[in-house]
Length: 182
Image (tube, rainbow, N blue to C red; front, side, top):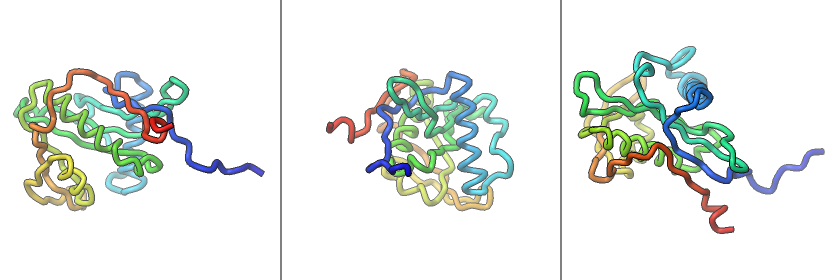
């Protein structure tokens, strides 16, 4: 008989980074498909679109024993082709077993906006599913209008860039609180 651990295993470190490795990009695509196709049923088959050809994917990677283990979150950012100083974020996804750690989604958002800000962004927008509006408001975003996308209620939201200073580094690391207290 296998014994269940007394508590869930927590990776030793997480890194939010620009997806530069092929395995990170593949894992981000799989995670997006899991969240938006299988769990939510927003898309059928996969959620890939033309934006993926030029968007910058950002990933949250769980590290174990000093090595990258797996992608547990992702988001993509890109400039608007018609207004290069206006950037968009989309396809924010966090693996189900890591959603209890709300900071993963928040840090993906923070890294996305600060990266775009460093690249000349003067306005950052996203279409946010209605159930996530509260979290975005907490992160200094304003709801501009409610719209229907892919048969679901969304809000067009804009980040307050005064709360997102430009960040030029491609990767930041986090150690979970449980390990910091030990």
